[in-house]
Length: 207
Image (cartoon, rainbow, N blue to C red; front, side):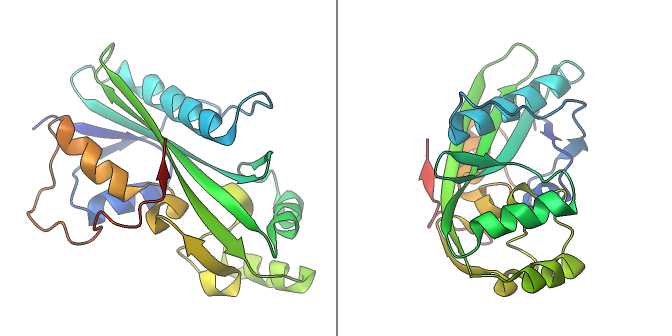
């Protein structure tokens, strides 16, 4: 089987791959995520995913490299990871009581200099109305600093999330409905026939 490398520092993405039984080695890409006002959220997420994959591909020419990047968009305003807790509180204050998009860009690179597949998946998330006290109480349970939008859909979500439309795993950081169809196309298959963890439904908007 062709080796799979996950070019990501996110433990959540690695866990999603393991739960779907895709064996992957995790390599942290030594790159800074870009922030560009002239790109859409989908374009920015795909570009950052490609940059992460390319940073790792040179060292693994015979592997398939999977890069991913998640951003949050409220209209034309794009949020990545907060700079600090003050910035995290500001972001949640902007998102509270509104519906925003969570976009994950995916880059699948077939070895150094090989074919690159770029996709983006969007899910709609509605947050509850939140007071400042509720936001700071949430931060006691969840570290917002490594999460786009300053919240985690997989942890203490009921405290702030009212509704998710589309792929839940996309909001966590890796749209497994899409990944489950892309990886077999490049020769990477689950280590077991059990594929029921992430059925190919409710997969959000793919571009």
